[in-house]
Image (tube, rainbow, N blue to C red):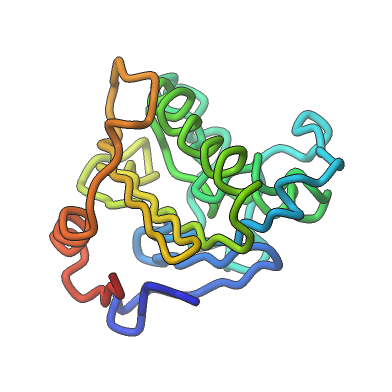
Length: 211
């Protein structure tokens, strides 16, 4: 089930299917647009929890040509304001080593202001994993970036991050400006379908949204 149709999205958008998540990637921006996965109860409750410190550092995606990948450790080294912000989060993939390694591709990340990433956004990810996942099996979790003109060296910096969670005939919508914030919880990120759709289409007017 996909609530996005990228056929008319952008001329240089490609779909990349990893084992545990699917990526919509813009080869002109050299950045991810959407990353989505199915969050299962079994994965969320798995007794196996791969320690991130035992997994290889961020690395290039073997399914995308290197010439379309610009994010590296060097790009982030002198930019202390930004974290390597996951789209599909590592914590959702710690149930298996292959899944954990897949989540660490640079193509599954974009620059995210540190406090925003480590507080409200991280709490939103934990809400999906620890509150919803134990109750609702096979949730569809979509995360996307909306890019303006800001760059971190050669890496585009999103203006916004958004998330859509679909489960049990329910859909939740979240939208957050990628900026320095004092918010520590994720409640302020909640939005509605019309607001999210309007914002996304301002950036990508040819994207077909099925919500």
